[in-house]
Image 1 (cartoon, rainbow, N blue to C red):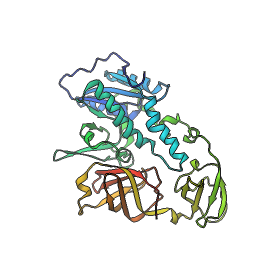
Image 2 (cartoon, one colour):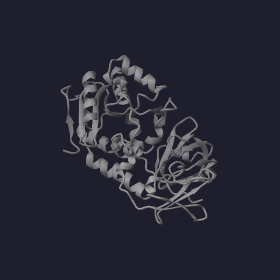
Image 3 (cartoon, one colour):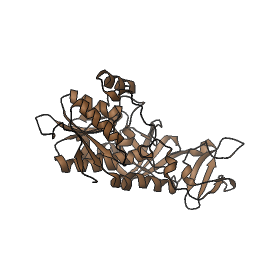
Image 4 (tube, rainbow, N blue to C red):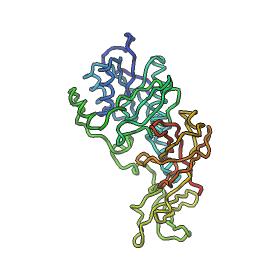
Amino acid sequence: MENILIPTNNNGDWKSDGRDKVVVLMSGGVDSAAAALKLKLSGYNVLGLTMLISKDKTLSDSARDICEYLNIPHFSVDIQGEFKKRVSSPFREAYILGETPNPCADCNEQIKFGHLWDLAETMWGPSFYMSTGHYARILCKDNNYYLAKAMCAERDQSYFLAGIKKERINRILFPLGDVHTKEETRNFVRAEGLPVAEKQESMEICFANEKNYRYLLAPSKGGNIINLSGDIIGKHNGIENFTLGQRKGLGIAGGKPLYVVKIEHSNNSVTVAERNFAFSKTVRAKNLNVLVQEFLTDKSCKFLAKTRSQAPLNYCKIITANNKQLKIEFEKPTFAPAQGQRLVLYTEDGIVLAGGVILPRVE
């Protein structure tokens, strides 16, 4: 039964008892377990919720075991259909079009803080907080709530959260936002005796089942690899195997190192050039989600932005910002902003202002 929240243990029905209620989205891993534990120790009335995106219930079983240890209720919900529609199918379609999708950002926006939130409200009403094991912070200033970077720069995941609805920010808790290292999180869970403390984290896309994501993609026809002059210098076996800025796996030997600078679905070609041609000073984004409107109209505010999760923050100025599109110009060109990835805008003190889906470069 899809979209039905089903209890998996007998730890109560989550009645109101005077404490603030928190739904913790739990994957069965260290971070979400630490979030649930921190919230319980802080006095919250905690419930664990796990989404099922396949027939494999291993993650749900692990999360249930953690909730048993913490003596809190645990529910699971089958959302295979919604996940396919909102995350995994768009992921496949994007690669076929020569784009570079960001399924984690899509999942946070469309599923975790979207569909699951709606299901939880239908089940329990609006009187709860939502929490995850993400490394990010929610700041409160003058009764206004802001999404911000985590204290741990290496683990910061605010980039993937910029699509969350503004009106939901004040009901989100990120207990790991003030943690300084992943090992600190692991030590905290270990000290409390949770068996998940030694569990290794996955480095692959969750719905790829620890495999390379390319096995999910239907093979397409091959085409030409060309240079900036349009000369054919090689062959490729499908544009879905490439992303902007890619250097390895091009199958072109000799000469200077070459990088992917353009992917065109219309003629099934991949354009390569030297590294300096992969940089862009102007970046546009669609589907703009504005979290802090007043900052975007404050001409005295200095902004920073990034175009991929591991990219450094670079100073920029806003050319256009409205409900449909964001256009910025970096002080220094940024490397290979890829269509389908996220453009996320920050203040100097780490507050997330807005985020959108990167459009093809036009320069």
